[in-house]
Image 1 (cartoon, one colour):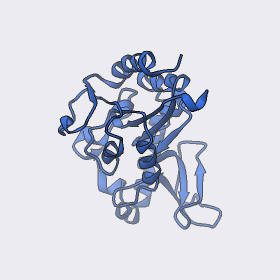
Image 2 (spheres, helix red, strand yellow):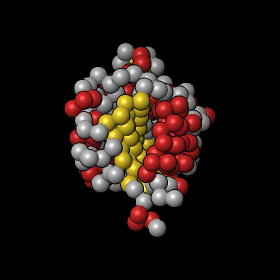
Image 3 (tube, rainbow, N blue to C red):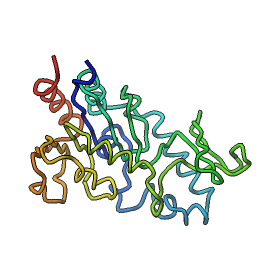
Length: 238
């Protein structure tokens, strides 16, 4: 049966995590917990003060440990029963996985992983929320957060583009569609494919330039719960 399932691709952003209590830096004018974003999310910030960067992400992890998926995450997880679902997320938390989604591509890295500063292929699961100076990879180099910072390549972008090109249904949720390269993914979705944008605020782009697009002005938990029921009725193979 699996080959007859439609491929549902979701691009999720900070808005879906915000409902679970995870703050977004855009909410606070480019300051993230009172730090300039470049001090904690750039290679220059890391070179200048690695201890500050590590502590910043320790606090993010501590916060995320207690965060629970909301109805939006759960609705996407539920859709796996009916569709071949891929979630492409700009979020670094693990709330999609906590909700039960099994195929999640993290464009901007993962909070609960660390990687070697010597060899980017050496990536480690973090058992705890702390990553400290002196924590080293097997080659003896300091570990850093496994996060894609400003001015760094987005290594999963090509995989995400391939997924978008193959979508039968495409959903954008909780993202303003202005953060590139992720925002450009919708441009790879075939013209005839139904597209849905779920966000509490209307994105600051011209939605009319996209063919076959429906805008749902709701927060993720409400909009996705409603949309998932609609998609199951309309497109799922019974």
